[in-house]
Amino acid sequence: MGKFILVTGGARSGKSKFAQDLAGKLSKTVLFVATAEALDDEMKARIEKHRKNRPETWRTLEAPVEIGMKVQEHAGKSHIIIVDCMTLLLNNIFNYGCREDKIDAKLIEKKLNAEIKDLLACIKKLDAIFIIVTNEVGMGIVPDNPQGRLYRDLLGTMNQKLAAEAAEVYLLVAGLPVTVK
Image (cartoon, rainbow, N blue to C red; front, side, top):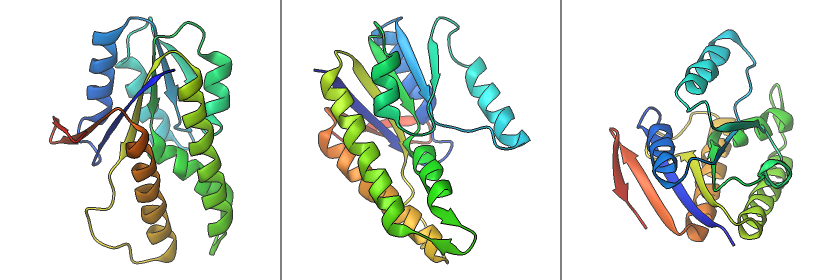
């Protein structure tokens, strides 16, 4: 049965660096699960920058959705599995459940809950340490539109579910980790 560490914080708080540094201290056999999709030039540049910051010996699995299933297929003998990040996973689910001004909140929530359930089952099944990165978005203003509020609410609920199951939780503030659990 695997161990699970949750790393959360705001944008550019140092979450990914902390997760990667922690993984590097624990093992050299790392699978990095990237949820980002390169849908525009700016995102392509961000992904490339992140890729260059990872050790070349780490394997990368691109999994914008269906993380649990894909990790089980590709984990191999990885001792550490980093999922970076759940925030973009929710964004990917949103992209499938939103069309222009119409939001299918029930579909988005159903898909997100299935993702969380499958990922937690994967963690329990594999003998690896999972380090899962997510953003903390509920500390700012209330979004001025229904889609923004739904996104914030679902991410907050997801983070609570993940934190409840995690063995350790860290909140990154200005690059500094604060132990939450």
